Image (cartoon, rainbow, N blue to C red; front, top):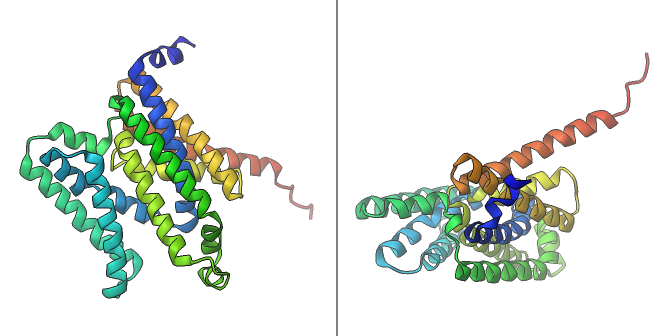
Length: 280
């Protein structure tokens, strides 16, 4: 078991694991709603929509978290404005702003031309560089996300079933939708340092997809998704240490691998328990 204990004996790997575990718990809760509501495209758009804010913050010397948060909020507000005033569909609004924000971020990066290393961290994460203040920020973000998810649980369940029913029951479907967008934004902003803006959606979706193979209740799926996410973080860090691969990409790939493995195991179990065909 030395190959497991050896990397986790180092302080920076321990911090990376704790930070990744906090991200996995938050993404497990938020990602469950993303999968249930079919909002994967929104998550992808918000992840890439952070790029200009992070790039501007890096160039100007501001905290990148502030830039990422401002950019993600602007993206969310822009989607709503295009829907209401531009009379565009939800996916069309997301697609237009997604391309615009991504292009703006690339322009800022190419114009400055002096922080290729920072751009790599923005896109692919730098989980091994997580510090103690970063851990504190992640803990606060995770606690806030869990509290918001718990407070909005009933309206979100009603919204997932039928928005009209939610309105009749007085559960404010628009407020629930806004809370869900806020949760997705919080999870992506908190997670981008661990796995980067290009890979964050994998950690947001894959553990929940894997958990969906084994449970149909939303709270149970959230818990299992968090556990599987922590497992993906552990496997990704071990893969990165022993194979010399990028840590963020290794974590995202491990999460996708867990989703595929869960699907295969569920298919195999269903095949073994399926009733035999009746004799002619």
